[in-house]
Image (tube, rainbow, N blue to C red; front, side, top):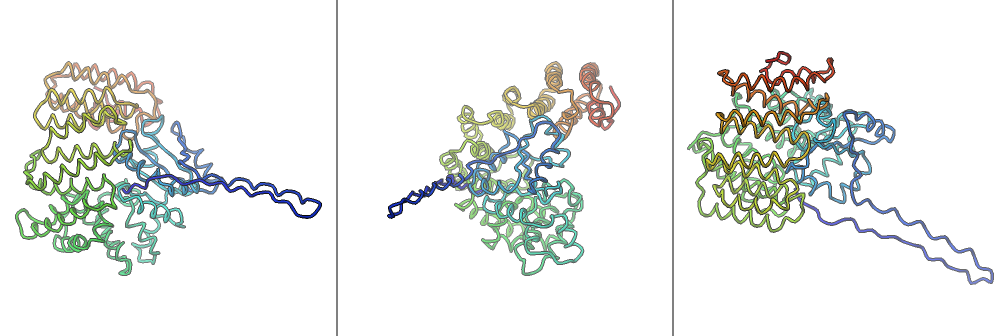
Length: 532
């Protein structure tokens, strides 16, 4: 995203007093009231607890839409949004026309609200009507100027994206703005609010065909979305020829590639892999066009530093196509120089702490992708003392150590990351990562695994709100890992002891709440209620 620096300049105009030349002076004109100062920051509403009804009551009374941001302090794309969108003067000014709600995943009740609003990934941003009806989900990976355009379209809309979708699929006419909102809807964060995941690719294909020819930009993006969805669905059989033709048309048109950069950067490798066979002429043609487009994007000064790094990373990912899992690519000297230059420039020009939380892990990951593990480590270690959330960087260091085959260092960095993590949801997530890595790398160290799990469980808050969304999924995933670890019943005693520990927490939950069943089912694969 393009970062717009600087705040609004503020000026106050005072009217001077004047006197009449007549013998009797006219009353002096009172000084005009100072012009209201433009806001310099968003006045976020930060709800505590799982009840957000008061926010919508306020919105309805003021007849204002609600803008919901769902994120986390450590999350790189969240910090990118904070640095490039939420600091923009036009976003700050526009926030006066809606109720801005900031929902951090670690605040009390946040995970239950996440389940209520069907949000999973950080960040998710939703625009609601004053009455609580969802208008649209805003994409987090377009550039900031495009983001503002889409936000303004949503605020001005008299209908919702869901209504536009139904009308378009029924063959009814919808406005060009409605088509634009459909094409830029955050389809990857829909969570079945518009369509089931299994129907997404087909629905997007129908939309692309239904889109009027004069709305070519929207039709092109919808078509690209449908091809991406098919590429991600490993059971689907895409029309490779038609898909290649559409993708090549976009890649070879610099303007189209620019407006669709987020999809090309994030899904370029999947597109090439799903639309062509290894070593085929079609593969070579797609690779050449994709690489050329990515090179243009990597050099595009209108994109944010993070986005340009992502373009270089996407180019490296193309080299990894068809390599064995975990194999490092063999980059040529020119491409290695491009990687190093992009990282050095990103480190040099990125001064915002928020943006560095996004840029530096991305740069380190790019170095790791390129096989430059030592350089990745050096970049991360230099950043640790000044990072907003250094524990995120530590997980990248752990991944580098694992790639080298250094199990001890991988576990050490993962443990440090967990120990330094902050916030109940984050600590549960990081603790789960540590447990998973212990099971993967040292499954024989039962005492260490049991101690780690017991510590994670010891921090669980015995309130229903804790057992929703990411927390619930994290606990279930940890339970599944432990069950697999105990597949031959060698660790029955440890699992029984841990089960008793979590049962003590579960027993404190209200019997009628779904959280109770979820809690009791943690160490029982798909049981939901039975206990070990």
